[in-house]
Image (spheres, rainbow, N blue to C red):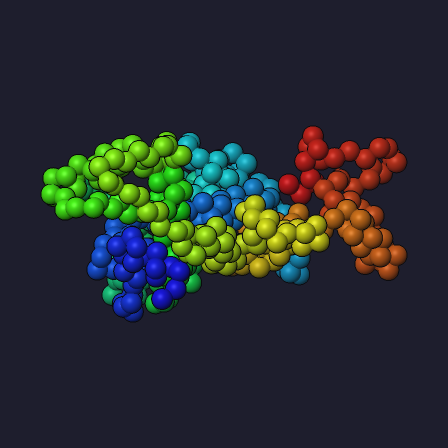
Length: 397
């Protein structure tokens, strides 16, 4: 029996042993004992590492530049700042939410439940007018005879309305059926439960003043009423962090024998540290990104951001871009959305400028192209001082 099993048994829980599938939206991570039963995906954010990983991914993608391009007949990309989506990025997707607010909600929902849903709002002329994020817990998905999906959205008051594919943005984590995403929290339910049990065990241990339990011995026989009274008095005066270190006075031949701190209690801190690494693995987030610096060095810290962008942010960015191409832009229009991750991928200034130097010397780039990469406008034709675009904003922002 491992550490987690012993802690679960100590706290009266049983670990899940059946292989029955969990709800894709992780409405409950549970078993017959009721552990985690009915706990929503949002409740998983009580685990600080889940919250930190979700925030890191959603916030990073929400705040990178979102650019709209159109491909011409030669396949070249031309930035189109006047596209309706571009106006939403700058001005907000609805009266309550800015573009970063919207993306954070949408992406966080996909990370926690496996599905992020947003309604596409169009004007009377069919032009894109905004987006409205829809909490996944309010959605029921039906497959129509045509094979398309219908999304029935409740309002919490018994009323529902139906949206069809093409009327929504549906961001999915990896799916089992090709239709509904399944959260990685539900796929690794045993891991999440183990981390939560370790946190609960630590909380109970500290709530008892970080002191081990013990035994009170009496030379004679006590009635049930005497036992209950002694137990109650002892708990009131000596249990809990507020009573830690209080003096124990016994009379009537009573003696106290303290139990030793178990190896499991002594290993508790290391167990919780390992839990942080386990959760980070689920979300593909390097531990330094969520302030887990135990095994950190200046060298690997410098690479953490690059690793984060390459193996975590880039796959999600491609998912988002593909969903916009499918649901927002009309077929054959040539428009596409790009979440520009170049800020994460450019590296430190010395490495970046050495690369620019090589590109200039070999003729791969000219000076204006290098300036554009760095977020500056082309050098003025009259030789004047170069100025950053729009009060210091990158030229392509």
